[in-house]
Length: 376
Length: 92
Ligand SMILES: [Zn+2]
Image (cartoon, rainbow over all chains, first blue to last red; front, side):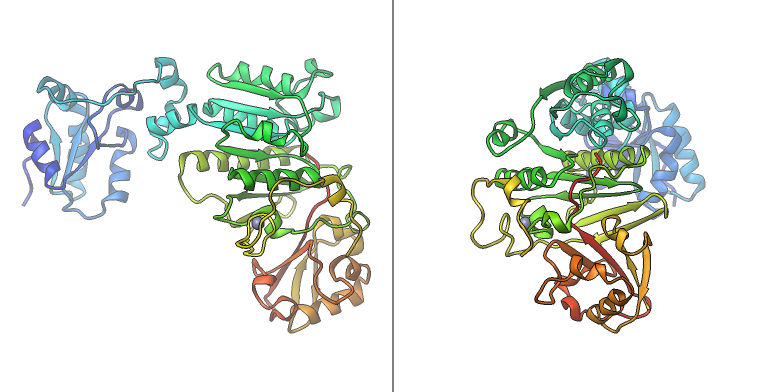
C-alpha cells in the first residue's frame, strides 16, 4: 500500500522518529545557509540515483524536503515511479519547518565567499560544511617547495587548508620550472618559500603560509615540528633528511605522507606512527654510498611530481578529515611509462628501532654520518 | 618463470631492462638464476652471509618476503617479484 504523497512537518517528524531517512534535495549553497539537523543532503540532480544506491529497499521510509516542497515533490514522484511506496514529500519544506518554530543548523564560521569558494567540497557528503571547517583550521607542514611540494601546496591552498608550513632553503632556478609549478619565470632567484607563499596568496586569501627558509637538521627539526602540525608532507630528496624526518615525526606522533619520484616512476605511502610502519620499518639502515648510486641527477618527467605530489595532497586531506582508507601500510607505485599502478603491502616491524615495541630510539642522531656508513 | 621488476637504480645492471624473468621454485633459486644473467645484481642485493641486504626489500605478489619465508618464499610461473631498494636521493 502506498503512503500519502505529502505529509505535514509534524508527521514528518513522527516518521523520522520512527526511523524514516530524511533527504534534503536543495542546492549546496542553500544547504550551507540553513538546514534541519541529521538530514542527508543530496542535491536534486543526483538525489534519485543516490537514494537508489543508498537505500535499495523499495519500502524504505523516506522524507524528502526542499525549500518549499516544490522540487522535493518531483523527486518523490520519480521515486514512486521506481516503486518507493513510502517516499513522501515534506509539505512546505524548510520554510514550513522554520515557520513552525523548529531550529535549523547553519554554517556559522563560513563567510558567503567561503561557501562559494568551497561549494564543490561542501557538496561532497564526506567533506561537507563540517569537513571544510576542519580543513580551514588544519595545519599541514610541507617539507620541500620543489617538485612534490609544488602541487601539494597549490592543491592544499586551494582546498582551504588553513595553515601551510613551507620548509626549503633553495632559491628558484630556471631548471626548476619544468615541474615546480608553484614558482614562475618572474621569480627566478627568489627564495622558494617566498615564491611559493606569493603563489598561494594569489590562489586563496584564506590560507596562512608559515615560511621556514632553512634545511632541517637534528638541531632545528623539533623547533619546526612542534608547531601543532596535523600532518607532514615529505617531498625531500635525500636520505639523511628522510631518516631525520622519520625519527622526529615518530617521536612526536605526527603522520607523514611520503612521496618519491624518479624518471617515470613515483611512490606514495603514509607513515602513521604506531598504526602502520614507519620509514625505518621498511629500511632500518640506509644503503652504503658505494652501493647506492645517487639519483639526484637522474632526471624526472615534469608531469610525474604533479601526479605524485597531488596524491600526497589527497592523502593529507584524507588524514585530516578521517575519511577513506589512507595509504598507511600500503605503498602505491606508479609507473607512467608502463601505465601501471602496483600497491604493495607494508608491515610495521615490531623490532623497528624507531617505532617498535622494544627499546626505541629517543632523540636524534647524526644522519649525514649514518647515511655515509660503509656496507656491513 | 617468475617475473622480476627491476627498480631504476639497479637497471644499469640489467641492460636497462625493467622486467626480467628467472626460473626457480623459491625466491633464492630464482635470484641465483637471475644473477647468472646479471652478475652485478648479486652484490647490490645479497650480503656476505647470503641474506637479502637490509636496504633491499623484495615483494612477491605484493607481499614483503620478510613477512613470508624470506629467500625460501615459494614462487610459481605467475609470481611477480618487485625489488625495492631504499633510494638515495630522488628528483624532487
Ligand atoms: Zn618503524
